Length: 294
Image (cartoon, rainbow, N blue to C red; front, side):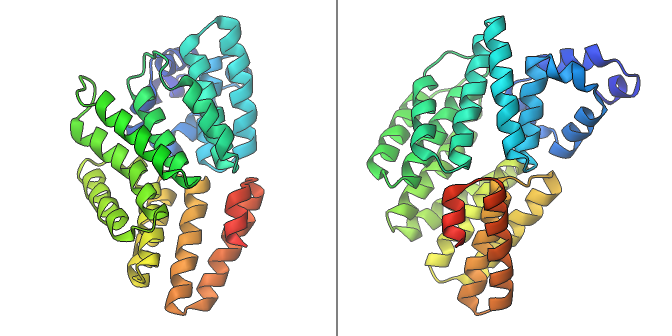
């Protein structure tokens, strides 16, 4: 791809992007993708649904939430004109995910529940949907719903020709661990978080680590292990910055670090992190994050 970019072979770049599915991006740094889009002609991107969709994902991860939502909606219209069912499903998923990012959790669940069983060329699509529905249900306090989605996913993905079973188990456990946090079973949540971190590190799946470190940092705060909480938050922030990730994952990590510094009595750092997270939550129009930040 670097060769095509250097030679301004833009059509070849489009061809390469057209063949990618979501799981392929786990090995591509966000910073590299951003550089690619900075070199492509804007008109080429605006008229290509797949490029527009990928650029929106890059913008979202980089913290440009509202621009990303706009591009997902435009890409959805283009995919609908092309009758591209996978592209339509991808956009609906991302729009649903951004309902979550902006605090509209019930709408996020409704959107994703409506498309979770849709056939898709990307084998990660149904697995990702299953994880999000587990997590979002837990966040809303619906632990029974989270358990039902988890049980359904475990049965559905008991055998897979596309993924390492360890990856499937770890992804679903990451999403399900928050159910135990919400239910007050912090030790169970902590044990799952630690196992997930260990596995993702071993598998070198760095893109999954910022959100995992956030969950770990938040849970150990309630176990009154503030130094461990700060360490997890620091690792997550370092990993996010290395990847160019400045979306809500980054902001929640700031929030978790604030909590744990407050627990340790390092109030200046706690208030600094809390103010920074609140400012970003408001900028991203994340209503529930802003409420926690207050």
